[in-house]
Image 1: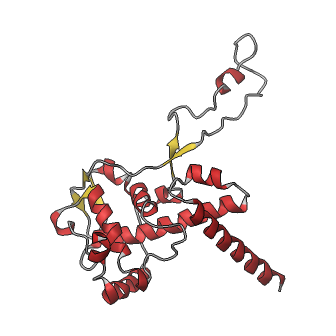
Image 2: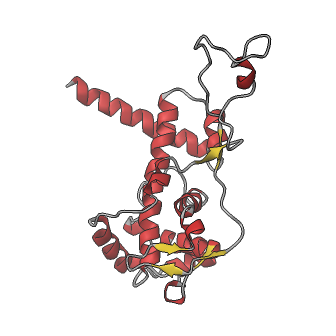
Image 3: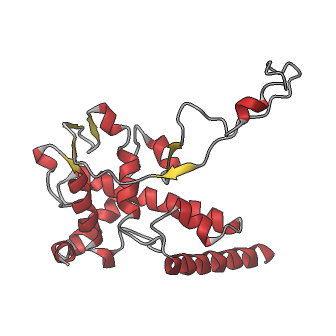
Length: 228
């Protein structure tokens, strides 16, 4: 409740700033990490074959196959990302609000922003910048600053005047859109709730049911429009 009370003061000023930000293009050095933010690298890094693939690549006597019939390597299932529990420190931030050092933290920053987003909002949330969600950015910023320490000029949970928070909110909006699209694809394929839950632990069954209804309604509308 304390976080929600703290967030109540964003009001109209936050909404106006958000609208201005929405119109500006953003480019990120590690944008590729946002393309599939829900999962880590495959289990068993450095070995991208499935169990038993090494044996299949040989003949019965143990010698390598020479007939070109080696099976294709298959990627193992990837584990859902988790939010780090140790507070880490960024020592440099550029003029655009992007943390730039140390490099080893920069690489995983987008993934952690996605984890913060998914641990805070429902998949049914459609717009982090909506004027009726004035308390939500403050809650997200509170979690961001609990996860990372930033240089003194950015060590606060305000939106106004803090480029780190502004950029982080934009990137979380991107993560939300990517998350919703990924789950929608699974629903469209007919995946069960159990399978979706395994890859998206933060989705409750009630949220899943609500989101599925929205997806099905959207598909019906699109189909109707194509029919016309």
